[in-house]
Image 1: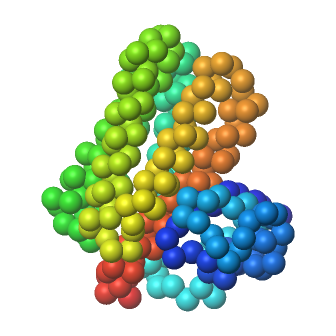
Image 2 (image 1 turned 90 degrees about the horizontal axis):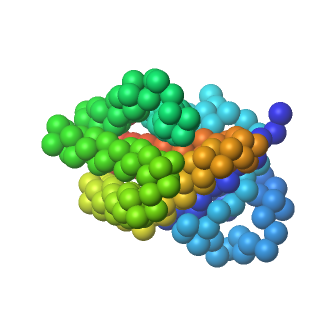
Image 3 (image 1 turned 60 degrees about the vertical axis):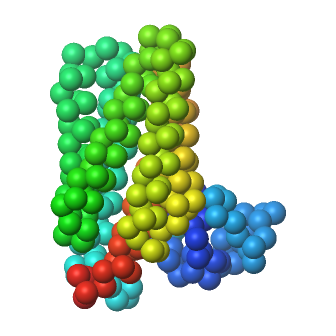
Length: 241
């Protein structure tokens, strides 16, 4: 079955590269995005991509080490958005499991730091883990304030959330030459925007829209995971030979 998802253009992307990456004809991508100039793609622009096959095929000719690294990072981002969703649900409906759900959510930050530890060492891995932990905590604070109807607290949490995204973008651009600050910031801003909409729909009990946007959150998170993983593999090819 064919699938479609929204992909955010990253630095260096062009129509040919996208067609190769997602194993779909360039003409089909062009057809799915009327009004888009295929010869002038802009970073941060969103395209609807038809994805016919698995993200990993045997003829991609990547090493086993790279395959496992990319797969592991995809799993972590799947867990990231899944446990964020469960936290939103537990906070919105004041469920008795909220303390345990948030604890599991924060484990994701530790796991993401550990995933890059072999490449960047302990200091940078710990910095990244702390940044992701703050990202998750600010999201929880925002939901708590929104549920309580405290608009001032919600605005403060949201501002901290986006400032943290800026810090994550600066982190990646400073440690990896294949990740631009703007490119990473655009990805994280989109992630935040989608997650905020997810929380709003859940709080307003608009469950159909909430489910629909979660599908988009999942696809965007996987694309973000791939962008970061591929950049790391490019930077440390000897570790993934």
